Length: 429
Image 1: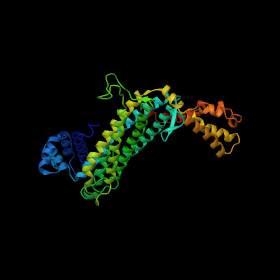
Image 2 (image 1 turned 30 degrees about the vertical axis):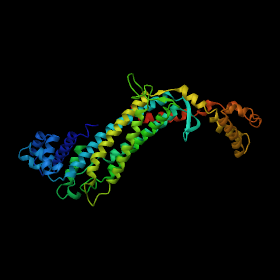
Image 3 (image 1 turned 135 degrees about the vertical axis):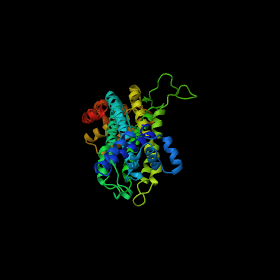
Image 4 (image 1 turned 180 degrees about the vertical axis):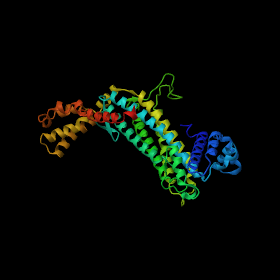
């Protein structure tokens, strides 16, 4: 990913666009084919140092690049950059860099998806407490939780892929996009060579709503990873300790406290998500340009587009690492579930009483009375209920307090997950 966004790579892509444009000019008969062949044979991507040296004098990076390439050529060099304006080259090359970077992001999503699916299947039946508002609610399974992450990662992939397709466009439309100095056929040929589609309505720049969509998709991907990482961080708390990040031999969790094994990588993911989200706001700010074009977006997107890709690429790699090596404590999950004295069955008891003929509010108040006593006195909820003749005589309480029955539909969700994996076999292999 670093290589894609290096100055060397950028100039290589600029040169690729320039040569593709020359192919277009040759195809329409405006430039001799033998001159284009000489340029293709002798033009090499200049070093960043040489471009910077020229730019220090002329104060224009694209013009400096053009001069640095042209100085390698003979008389045929007069055709280099023929009919083009800077944005034709810069915007089209940026689209190529985005496609390169996007492929790495999609590969990272696939890796994370595969790791999550594998661990979800492993813990399909590992019962744990489900929480709402951070408070014990009803039982679920750890695999069920992970399955939800997998579905979200699949949606992440679709969003990023769509944003990449939106940005798979190039432009060689000249100043203010009117093709006054360049034949539209040149654009068509060049884009075909580059694997892009001509932007149907560029205005010397490609409209930045495309890039805003991309940065928003990357930000949403980062935010999903943050959601998963926050869950891991909470579950790794000492008082909870249901999971733990991988902790290799020789690692240190704290410079001061030798006992510490902190969820620091998950915290890192959360921190970087803030950066990627902030960058997406810059993408939105870059959409409204003056008239046909200005370059207020240029300085900002040279930072936020590479940085968003770099950060998300790293986040995906580290998230997959966490999930693959996550230490899971099923016994602790069961103890935590049992620590709320069986209150996780209150809803099942409520419904059973309604089924037995009680009015819902009466049933609710009856169950709530015993639930509050169990909570406040740290008494077993089931024992309190069984000692109440108003309840015990009406119901099969063993069926009400059946833990396995609370997660009996887990296979329904995993059938859906397997269907998703099967659908995406070429992608998530």
